[in-house]
Image 1 (cartoon, rainbow over the protein chains, first blue to last red):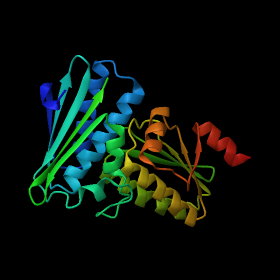
Image 2: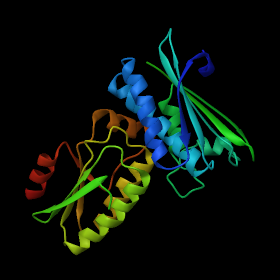
Image 3: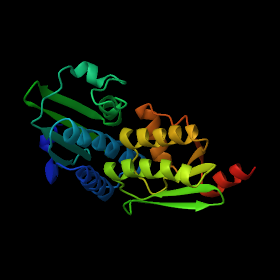
Image 4: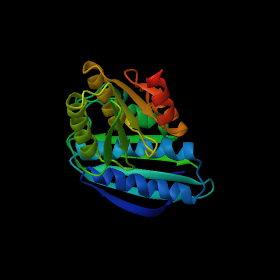
Length: 135
Length: 116
């Protein structure tokens, strides 16, 4: 099952800090609509929040696309930016690594919170993060 | 200060109600306003009610932890109250702990603890 196999149910621009709230609400609403439990929803929406913030803070802005899948029921969120890319992905996925003076748990944390997590990044060209959760 | 949070001063304790969907900018503003209030009101404790928050990610978690650290330096104990079970589980998975702050199930529990 690939994220792009799903039905696109929402697109959200990620430019300003309030856009993080917007994409969280959209993803949370779609999960609720399909009967996700509170714990499932909180875990996945937290992962989305981490990545959406990265797009705005490190990627110079971008967008998030939300897909729904059936059989089995799942949600996926793809966050794309055209920013500088991640120079050392392995290091960035490790807890405690940060280039922004933050805690550096965001990327690795999001990876643990999603059932499927995939990062495609090209130095100088941008980053695409795909996250999926079964419902 | 935006309407994203409200600060009340009651019997030496600063009570902070964080509203649902607080933005990054709002919580940074809150951090500054609250540390100034701790000094201005000579507060002995800060109680932060996060029951409205469905999501606490590493950014918000870090600010909550910093708020507790700042309050401690200013000689005020911090309590985080009202955390939802799903939020607690997610924070553990993110590898975060709010070790500078005490936690209580509710505002009532925190105030009882403070009076003891």
